Length: 270
Image (cartoon, rainbow, N blue to C red):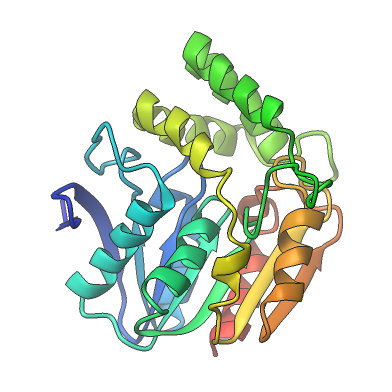
């Protein structure tokens, strides 16, 4: 397996497909790099070098007990970029992956990055607060953690129905639901639970560091990461942001709207 060593010695599993200008894909919770399958295949086929890696604690990467904060996670992204010698890259974060993109742009000054994309991202601020009334209540996130401790497989089984908007006009096949659950269960319980704490970080300051063209895509029916405090807010803060809203799309639009999301990425990266 191709692996890269992070700054603290954690081994990260990395896929490196194709040749051309590099695109780094950072996956969402609780999945792994395989969740980018449709986009990664077509981006590589179109002439991009596509790099996707499993976040520490997830998929085939090592499972340390610590390091599930965004400073460490953005350092992991930096390790991948540096180890592969990537230059003039685009970094694309889905859901939780938007946190790595955001913190990398500030903590690592967007080094070697020419474009960025936030897809269904938690940035700039997911949690409900006095100055963020449309955010997700902390009690909801704590309830997710308690459910994971009690019965992780059963919670995740139900979670993916909301993730993909089952019952909406879109939705996904039973195969995708089973595939997603399999990916999620490869992760360590520690990583799965601890990353929910990381979602509560405030990225509003980080977004001020974006100085490259940035694509923001979000589904208007996202029941996991509501669009108002995230996608719409990010597009207002980032100077060179382009917002595309997928009307009626759920959180997991990389699967439910796979062809559209892939084409929007190809257009943005061209």
